[in-house]
Length: 596
Figure (cartoon, rainbow, N blue to C red):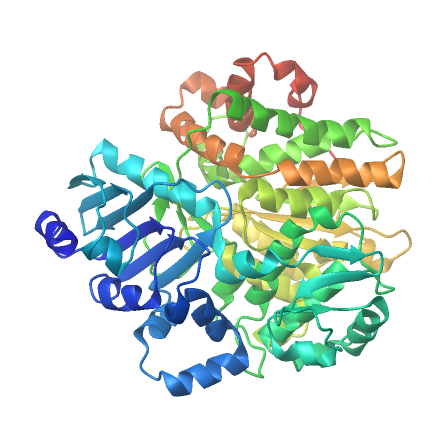
């Protein structure tokens, strides 16, 4: 008896994590939810007839279906647990191991299984299945192996709608048409075409343009529910201004996935007020926390969810591959511009990777007998320059992927957030949100905001904010940072930025003024290649190595950090590159830091 065996080896379990190719709502409701306070499952995309998880998830994510389902099943435990977050369902996307695995935990003990058994009644009671079991204390080294295995699968899984629906989003029919899945009733706003698939519609270019024009104003968008906004945003993303499908559709899948997360995040409820429930929802997701010399990762600020220790097993060829990506990004900004700007790009990535540890360096500077003080460690970096110089590509799209960020704030999005937060001044709203984040207890990863008006830096309240946050002697605990991209237009009064030494000392300006050289299609292909390759593997590796670095800093090393606050990350990257004889690729960039 599977459950009897589990009960004998783990009393009062609270959490169940599992990887199974097949399961059903009935099994989850009857076997898992009564036994565990928290359940996280990674499942295959097959559906089980009357107990189809796919059908239920569609009901939960479609406004009309959800209302009907609510009337039919008012006391559904499955629905309640999905909505309160104690039941999380993710689905296979790529690189999932074939072996099924299950990890159950109590306060300090664990019980794991790996083998052939799916989470079905037949597997539990009737089939001939084989499972290997391991159990013990969570302090046992082997426990981390089980956690790592689950996390590897977790990183390659995705939510139901993203996996099931996005798979059909990009399917070219001809030069003027595209088959896309629309899962809300906004499908009625365009003419349905008979495709044989009730989830899909064919939208000719002229109809897409008409559809986009209908929702071109903010007032019209505000009237839509979150799912409807998502459909509009996805359509706009897929088609250009004239209503024709965009180029490089094979590369747009990840952009659609990211867009889905951002739009769902900004429009996270369906009430008409448009209010964001809490300002913490603006913070980066996931959130990194520092505790006892190590970094942990949690879904977001304020969630009562057990944090996972950040680990990395990046070695050998995989490490070399990620180091090559780091070098290629810097060289792309150096070799393919009218004037090389790889120095700035490399320094930005170093700041990005070291950001969770800047507070430690500030403390070192404060205690140093030299003239250095905590204000000499900038807590923010601003990528400033003309349009089309690659600032947002580097400081938004690549930065988000390199850190594994699940959301990124656009300066323009603050129009909606002003209303949500009851403020009318965009620059002041940004400063307020930043201040709340910088004083929050625990998070250390940077908040990234794209397309900030440069004149923010000239505002007295921003001046007060950045001086206060950098001078405050009581802020010796873990402290986050922030990243801006700023578009500068010649002759525009809002493009003026502060050159006061006290601002430039605390906010690091990185200038990007040169456009990319060469053919536009060739340039886009190169940047798309970098975006396709970008991931957070090297970032996680650097966090683990930086934790080791700061665990034992000698007086000699402190002197090197005093000379260059980016020394720790440069040291970690150099040690890694030296394994493969790659340091010459970035040596010139590492010699000194860029000075605006």
